[in-house]
Length: 456
Image (cartoon, rainbow, N blue to C red; front, side):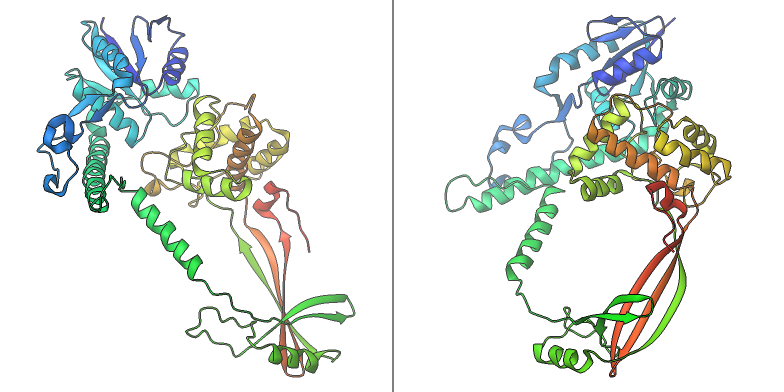
């Protein structure tokens, strides 16, 4: 009986696959059983050739040699990881290997790593795809029972290759052109250009130019403290006839002349006023589940974590701790057939601070096919980031913070809207208008998951 060669993206994932499939014994840098041979890349093992690899004269950075558009893109092994490339080639050639299973990360970059590897290794054996949403043993075993056909993954592979080759064209030609331009006066002024880094740099430059050209302007506001039977309340003066004009700094509550502000203060100070108050209800739904970008933004806002650090933590929670689903997702929704998974995940939450909220959502019947949670049309490769059934153990402080963020967001998504009472109080004094705004929680709804209670 032939065997399947399983190629993961990194050694740690290969080890997880081997454990989930029956603790396969290890031989050198691969695991083997009667059914599987499991090995891994070490990230990218193959890269596109540089112009100097293809044609020596193309190595000179001058306008005369531009643009560089190869008739076809050639590949070469990355020197640092060449031994691992040779091992995989050797395993591919074994007579008992009948098929290859692509177990690289379930995303565009993982697809590229595998396809470049198979292309340079000249693989002719059939390929199937392991597509995992989480790294729990049950999810791994289920993934092997539902392998995808290679034909199904071709569009993703083509997109990955297109991105790689377009980056090469932009980077190679742009960097050489800008370097040649900036080196005209002598020396070698390396000027990197990239599809992402150059527009990002332009955003930073634009912001820096705004900062440098900023001219501070002094303005005045009038804040008042009013007394009534119930106590005191603050208010701020505003111009009720204000209309936005060409001056982007204008606001209804701003006065540009100190004399006018002083005149209003003197006019109103110590005088009685009349009050008109309007109260109306307001509702706020729970935020959507996290995708990677929203997780990174909130982690930066709350804990000052960089986007890269948040990704590293989320990746560790996915791969090493197996408590989160795949983090590199751009979707904030779940597939409709995941309702049963959601129920079982909520039941598996063991943190006492969160367990009560999860149990309440289940008992109240709030966990159902809500459109703002379940939406197949808004899912591409992966669904939103949610917790798995695995209970967290040995998380460090920062990992625990990110995990807590995801679990609370997951539970809150099924809670009802928070209900508020919004109050706008207008106090008129000597013809001048002062506004006070208030907001009280009537029903906390999903805010209860974050420790908020009624304030009315």
